[in-house]
Image (cartoon, rainbow, N blue to C red):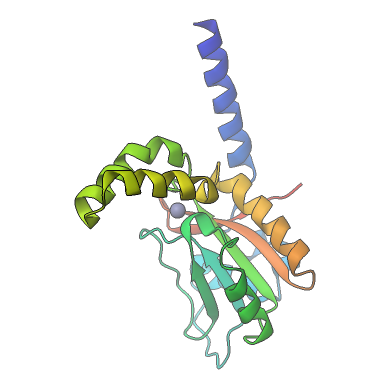
Length: 198
Ligand SMILES: [Zn+2]
């Protein structure tokens, strides 16, 4: 019993730590200095602060975000390349990232995770996943199980905030001249938050 309580307290502390790292962007003052005068700052102004939509002829940044249906960004036409992949995980979209940089000419990446992401704790969704493929897609149960076992570890993200932080670090190592900003989309408010890194 005491063990359970300790575990629960630790989990709660961990949630609080994660929440403390989120920075709400409610005025332009809240935007980190390094993102001001960059397409990353503009993204926050368009989406969170209702900045009037400017006209663009070419893409200014690359946005990596989850495939989740609860998210919609308010941004101008032509403003951004967008890669949508479960959990904002760009590990398996490398060529597309390279393309956006090399051919598309973008110099910034906004990596946008979100709370309540389905790619967190995938293992718990195994039975539902298998059953869903059998019923909805007409798969044999065995194939569905094998499919899950093979791919779930590649797409599991642990938790949303730690994942965008580690993914941002990985992308910076891979593309040293590109500015990468980890962000979180709150599906409850529809607003973007910045993630404090230290
Ligand atoms: Zn998600």
